[in-house]
Length: 483
Image 1 (spheres, one colour):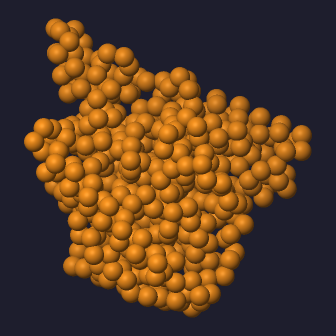
Image 2 (cartoon, rainbow, N blue to C red):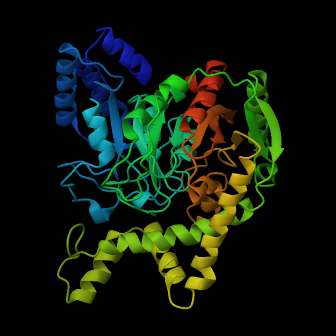
Image 3 (cartoon, rainbow, N blue to C red):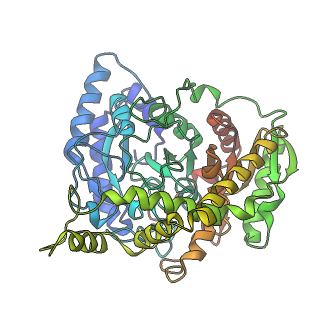
């Protein structure tokens, strides 16, 4: 059963080939057997999962239906789950049990999804390798010596290893799309505001967005359907109707205009990945798409702008973790200042401390105009580039990452080298656009992803293109050896 996609599970449950309880027990046993190799879970929720599975079976017996009713998933461990540890991969929140469910968690539970557990992640979603977690690094199931990508690496590794069919994730600068590329999955970052951020512990509030990680575009459409929608609890949520994403999967690509930015193919891109991207372009051209070279001239400024804006917002968001109200508290503080210093110094890891310090510096008196304000102006230029491009084309295609997954520890001594791996993904977050990564081949036995970007609220278009590509390729069906 573990090889079934979310769509296949939905059909199997509808046809009564198996029950949600049987499926849940089988996957929990598989996680117990195989996850010690991967470290993809922080917490398992066996009791909750079995009670939800039984409830889903009862709802089906009473005539209810739905693609997610009885389907097993997991949540990235920054979505608050009532009464269950929500750690954000940090010592700071190791003992924190959320008093409420995040909107995403509540919506998927209402749809009948079964929560198997909470997945490992880079601490407070800060990282591109899933090595900064307080609970240890996550391993890539395609090669256990390599990273799975981050910060949603736990969700990605678990789905890629067939421990479960799909999982929630979040994307601040590529943290859904990059691990999807590294583990041979399909990952979708929706338009900013499409999925509620209420109850999703913030890293950078103007950039964070929740979305699905799964093996196919069809599965991403199913999970996004359950996640998306307006939420009055979230002031950044957009009151925009949610289309039927599955209904748009089978549209023709005839005449679809695909833009390929010339800036994507510079010196930093592995030429083997460039070849796979061009192969994907040719495959879509055979399906009727029209290819056009375009330009995104301000892309070169995106990484420095992002790594001012994101740390600045992080320094503000993480100021609430002070050892006073909740979270980690140092022992025997001498006074209030000592409490703050030691609680934060002991509770936050090195990467989180680094970004807090960079952000605080960028926002400090005398530097705000020089750094933060300029970064926001670059952000506008990046958005303007996309708006101009989308006057000429319907979607934009390019590599998801410049390189395949690197070895564990290879970039630990050089944070900037790790930051540069986000060069193709962060622009979508700066502009608030939807983006999708889909499997497109392998380099040295490691998966490679191709990224698609679309105008605001055109997630259906991305899923349509990816689904049609997957109907005519088999990269997404490949399974890592041993799993």
